[in-house]
Every structure is written in C-alpha cells, then in structure tokens.
Length: 452
Length: 128
Image 1: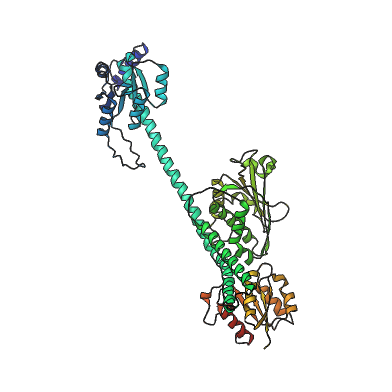
Image 2: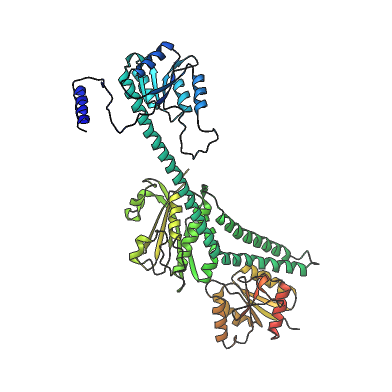
C-alpha cells in the first residue's frame, strides 16, 4: 500500500511540473486489463489513417484498441450493419441500444459524401455511438456546429497528439454513455407517462360505465315514454284505417314522428356518452352539452322532485371539448347536486355566461388559472344546488380520488376526481365552493371560448 | 251506452294527447288530459272522471302524491285509478297486461293500447 501511494505522489508531481504525458498508467492493482475499445475509423486518406493508428498505439496506456477502417460512407454503413446486433424490426420499446462500435472517427470529406451530410448519414445510422469528427480544417464555426449536432468532439488532424486523443476517446465514450442512459430513462418515462395516460382514460371509462348503470333505468323510462306514444299513435291509425282524409291523421303522424326523434336522441345521447375514445376535440356549444346531460338525468330530476332553473346565455360562444367526456362532467355534477337535495327536493340552478378573464374578480379563482390567461374570453358555467353544501373540513379534499362524503357503498369516490381530470384535459378550470348567501354548493367551470 | 269519462294525468303531453285520440276513437270514452300534476285535482273535480289514468314520475306532484290527494277528497275518493308508467316494461307484464310491483299494480306505458283499453274496462267494472 505504501509503495502505491508513493507512486501516485510521483505521478502528481510530474503532472504539476507541467508534463502533459503520464509516464506510466496508474498501476491500480484491482483494475483488470480494460477491454479493448472498438473504433471505426471512416477515413479515405491512407496517410491520415496511418497517423491516427500510430497516435493510438503510442499512448502510454494499457488501453487497447481494435481499429476498423472504412474508406467511404457506403463502406462504413456496410461495416456498421454487419456488426449491428439488433434486427431492424426490433421493438421500439426495446431499451438496449445498438452499439456496433464503441466509437467512430469520422472524416467529413469522403469520396461519396462531404461535410455535415456525412455526419448526419453516419449519426442517423448509429445515434448511440459516440462520434469524433476528424477534420483537415480548423474552422471553429464548423466545429461548434458539429458538436451542436451531437458529435462528441471535433479534432483538427494537424493538432492531434496521443494523450489528447486518448482523453478525447475515453471522455467521448463516457459522455455518450451518460447521454444514452439519459435517453433510456427518458424513454422509460415516456412509456410510463403513456401507461398512466391510458390508465386514466380507462378510469374515466370505468366511471362512465358505472354511471351509465345508474342512468340506465332513467334512460329506459325516457325512451319508453315516446315508445308508448308511438304505440298509441299506431293504434289510433289502425282504428281509423278507412278515413285517411281525417284531419287528425296529420296531427298523429307529426306526433309519432316527434316521438321517434325523442327516443332516438336519448338513445344517441347514451351512446355518445358511453363511447370509449381518447379525447377528440370539437367546437361544441356548452348550452347544448348541458341540455343533453340534463336529458340523461331527467329521471333522477323527476324522482327527486328537483326543480331545474336554467339561465343559459343565448349566443354563447363554442368551446373546444370532447363532447362525450364533457357530458360526463355535467352528468356527474348534476347527479351530485340532485343527490345532495334528495330528501328535501330542491332547486338546481344552471347558469352560462361569457366574459373576458380580466373582468372576473380575483377571488373567482383566476389566480389558480394556469392555462386560461388574462384577456382570454372564457365561458363560465355555474351549477348551484340548494342542498346542505360541503362540510367545511372536506372542501379541500373533494377532488381527491376515493374521497367521498356519501355513505359507504353509495359512491365510488372517483366522480369528482375524474371530473377534475377531464376538465384539466381540456385546459379548463373547475372550482367548487359553498354558496355564501344560502346553503348549497356552487360549481364553477371555466373554458376558453372559441372567438373566431 | 254512456261514454265513460277518463282523465289522463301525465306530464308527457304527447303520450296524453295520443292516448286521448286513441281512446276517443273507440267511441266508448270521453277523455281529458292534464299534464300539469299540480292542477290535477282541480281538473278532476271539474271533469268528474269515471276513471283516472295516472302517471307516476312527474315533476311537482308525482303519482303517489296525487293518489293520496284523491283518497283524501270526498268527491274523488271513489274514482278508480289505473297507474300507467314508463318505469316498467311490457316484458314485466302478465297476460292481463298488468305489472305487480311491490304491492302496486300498474300498466306499462308501452303496452298494446287494446290491452290498455281492456284494463280500463276491467277496472271500471271492478274486475281489477
């Protein structure tokens, strides 16, 4: 151990005294012979190649090199593909990078390719192998450009000496290793994000199907009403078969036709709602979304004897949303409001308006806006119930997944967290608070208006 | 034969109007429709029906509320009621067209109207 320290001191002394060359490699006892570094040297000039080879051999290092040579870009690509381990149809998710060489020396001026193109050609083929550009030119701008494009180093051929070359090779390999690990992590992160996104979509869909189950009885009732009307109409027409000129015929036909449209629209609403798709944004009128959602919860409204008071702004601007997901938001919020007033019956107030964000008071939650900015024209939808409101100690937790104020077994606790998720997906803003002047909860939804 | 007076209390005005036409087309019934359940008792007092076709799910007062009000009214408590609702399906009905649901008897709204007429007649003569 003592002799080793002495040797290190000796080396340090030498370095301090200005010597650039290490006389000997540090004799680290535990380090095994380093593996030979495989290098592809893409160089058409025989003289330059021999000089490079000589430089590498004369480094005072135990490091060995396996040098391969290509004279043209084409030859280089052939060598690369021969040594490639990965089949071309390998999965994109496969996180082992193809490294046919540990490093590439690249002369930019080849018989079949010149300049930046040469670099791009090779780098595209082996994006994870470090490339050191060797050039006859000392053009600093070109050097910088090559490094910006991803080259690990740019060495003017006339200014190369062995130790510097060794350092450049070793450091380039290390830097590229780090870059590759970073890229692998990034790919993993992207894959995880993608999985998370799809899990969230599945969760939204699961919650949707759950609420569809709850809505089914109501939808059946809403469809059977026009069906009953249709049957009555048919029966009437049968009885009056002989009197086609009867003026009441036109009336009955018209009523039957409306009944079909009614039944169809409620079925269509349910189908649109249950559709499983990723976000498909379309310009939609919020008033229309509210009407559709109301028609799907009409049964709940009637059974709980809730009075609906709508103040919908005519000529409300459209918003860019996924209609099916946004209907889910409204159905969920309406159901919550109705359930909150289940025992006493009550009033559900729905208001739509639009305005410029500046005009909304700061305490309206504008400070929370991340995506909606000042001067943006927004559509504001407010849903207000006259139930008991949200317990003060629970207000901050209502968007938490699996948090519910409903009795066990009556709520999944996912409703509002998914509502928030959907609103976020549309870059909107949601705020739920207790009304100030009377008991009840008030939900405010903000979406950027389509102004053009 | 005197026409029997039928009062339809249903918030679905479309169903009400078509039921009115169909029942009247048989020439056996005189039909009135009230789609606002809050005015149902008032209309019943004026119209003096022989039978009431009563919907269940209505905004304001529902079928159950109306039934109670009718029972409490000395002039209307004897009027037979036939509950007609879209909450049940024709598939739930027995061969007599009736659905027995938790002690209540009702006729599905989607039933064949001739079956509904049969039920009305059975109810009028006290068979059901």
